[in-house]
Image (cartoon, rainbow, N blue to C red; front, side, top):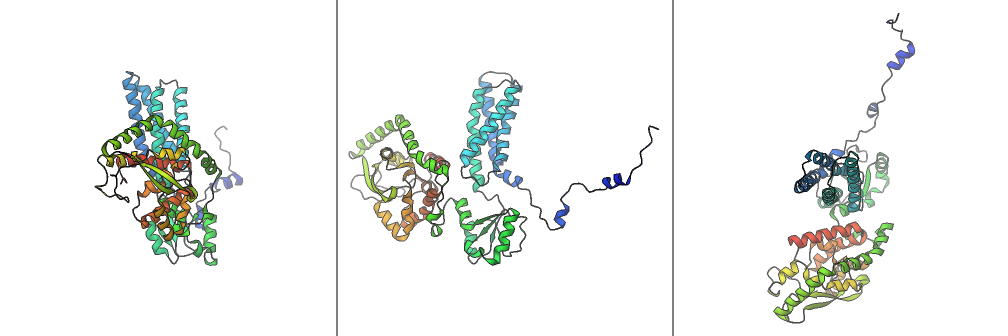
Length: 442
């Protein structure tokens, strides 16, 4: 009969009772279950993604409205495709959590997903405003670059410090809610990074613990390296030239940096030359000649050179650091200093090869000698060409004492160690922000 059921054999009963492909039972045998991390990582990108979505949508809608178009259904589809660009870009960037080129990486990732979005809406034969699309692209690039830099510097990872004799001082410098591991048999399932003291933990007592970290995929990092990444400065007492290990792209950028400096200076001449003439004329009218201030400073490989600046103080006044409301500064020159227009003559120093746009700020002979007496490693900041602006300058501002110069040294050595196109871009962006908002100006 057709409805008669076939009898089940022993083999079929065995197959039906076989366990499904599942690894949860391995946890009972001693395996560890790591917690999901994407929700924590995405929180670093949440606000940038929302802001990018809002700005991109507003820009595209404004272009459509200005053109007098009525195809809002097509515009909504295009906007929906644009929304996916920052969203998918943020998820892709999670995979590059130890990246030394955050801006370049973010720009490339955004370009890839933006190209996919444009290709998709074009393939669907949807009416598109390509000029509006191009206007939204820089917004996504800038937002994702800033978000990615913040992500790499934030404490999104679950970090634990392995106990060692000087741990209290280091815990204070870390300044966050970090776990403490004082037992070599501690559970590692809730840890992404362990911070060690190489002198203490590269020992027989902790060897099994370090092996477990390697085998479990937990990243091992010296505490000094972690602080360097999070704070953007090196630990000067432990800094050594042997730590300088440059990648091929850093060598390529170092070779091309001089060409890029010249290109930027030459292309900016239509703007900088009239500004230079106007500032020079103003200074001549209020206090006569000379309008330039010339000073001997230490540059690349400790070589002495003459740096040029516009003179913003009255003639026959003593030099030195300025203070708020300094009476030595001529009328109107406070604004000139705030906008960094007094440093326009240093473009000549760049053309002559004595300076770069970005690098450690050159110091005077007196400051160099006084700082080197306190910290002999101060001379290491001269391993690269000095600049009009630098990492220490945008991170800490001007130094008025020897102690502050030594503190700035940690940022200068960080720049020497991490010299790259991306770091220079970050410095330029920070410099523009300082000039526009006046923070750090003296």
